[in-house]
Length: 404
Image 1 (cartoon, rainbow, N blue to C red):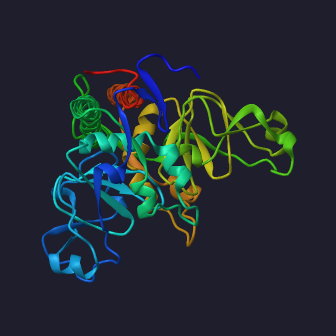
Image 2 (tube, helix red, strand yellow):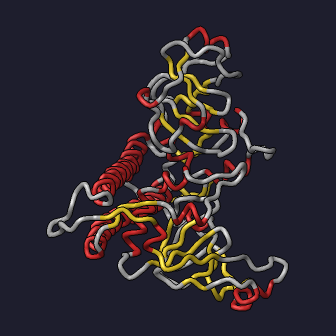
Image 3 (cartoon, one colour):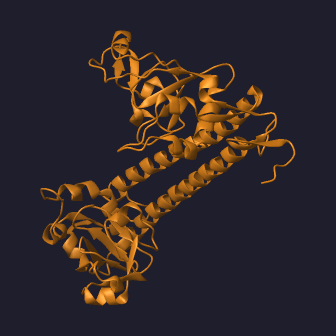
């Protein structure tokens, strides 16, 4: 591949001619992690493990609960990791990185690097992230992949002049700050929505223009019918294809309003005596994922763990959807079973809830739907910003775009 003027080919790819490539051990000191778990959690030094890391975020004392003493740190063979060090996970999910905002003690699943005056610590954290493929290639593959001290120390890093490192780190840090701010705003909007559901779905707060009395009804009182589903034989390939979306409880986790994880053929639907559920129908689970509910924008088939709830004319399906969302924990608690939780159709039908007049149901659902749309827009913006950051990392950490 031809290298354009002003650039050179290196082991980390094409970088500017005035950049270097160095191994981590050439620009950082290695801090020995603890050999064992502390016997006593007493003291004032935070002790952390991999789950305490939030990728790319600073490790601060305020969110760490387990603490040890200097004496206990010495007893497990660990040195104190000073603030400003770079942490990296080296067992299981490799390459999670964070910068320390305080002195800490780490366990043996983490490695810590203390940057010298030759490298900016935040720049190092970002530089490690773009070396994920290399890190995976040098890991020892066992039940859990891991990196030893030599592996970590030998990771090659593109190294611009210090002033350029600082500029790159600052630019990427600004994007991270925006992502974090969006995350906080999304959390706040979700809290506001939860509070709104608590008031609107119980009649504690009425929307302007509504004053008619509410009633308490059973779920059975507002349903025309409940329909279940089934699973075509896995041993018959002709039953499986891309003709009809087929929903299972797995789709609650990855819900997309116009598609499911799996699909079946029309023959598979007919031979299994299942049903095609019209779009706009409320679908909930009676086995596993109790309390979850979705509404699809396309016709779907469902398996035997799910039920389609067809509402009467005086019921807004969106209102009932939000009722399920708000009371999902209560419904989950009604489940029983030693290994897999389930709820009987009878118990489901007997659940009571506050029933508003139809026009008010529609108005409440519209308010909550607008909140969902606002949250979805913020989530989309956050995902777009994350994608932008990934592109920036590739451009800035390889020198294809220069900031100075």
